[in-house]
Image (spheres, rainbow, N blue to C red):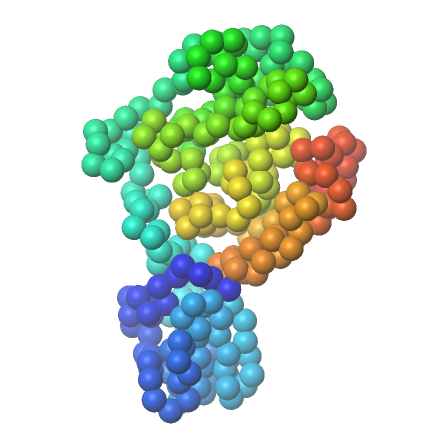
Length: 308
């Protein structure tokens, strides 16, 4: 299922002959003239305008939009996910493809450059290191690998680790992680850089995006990425925005895994179903308890061995 693809615009762009109403056409569907699976040429292959799923009423073949387009002669030799990405709706937001990796315009304002929050330090103070150690992370390794910063005890981001979000090797936003969780558990654990202060709004980004190659594993949070490493990308939430989907499509992954916290198994299957037509393969990885950020090093090793 695909919720935000303009099916009609896609078919029109590529001169695919369709029937929008009449015999054999169900409301909310369009029928393409030729079924690429059985070659019936009488508009018996319907495509759902909401989900992107198709069903041929002659041969019975069905599936998602990616499967359908991959079989059609018009798209042979082309990367189907990239084609679909051009027609993903952004609900009025600026498409990710229009962003420059260094500067961009936001809501008509002047282009801005990335900047750290006030009072930022390059070295992590003791409370920040202690928090990472309590989560069984190596502070020095994480700082070096993910270019972490910190704010100590002054300013809006005090007692937070500042985590830059990088897209195509350029810093475009940041997340601030609260480190005094045991002492003050009611404080919001994560604060995002505002859209006005970001080069690219954070809900358009994927954390650890540049590490994705043929396989992408989508997790919820930055600590999940820190634990699991390259190929894992965090969306800062359950599911992906339209802009994040388009960004992921640019990597052209052959396989996408959804790896959510153990209390979000139902949501992970729902989301996997929603994007199943966009990529060659979409699967769910289930956790019995906890979240990916709590895995042991051996568990991470076994997981990576199985999926990469």
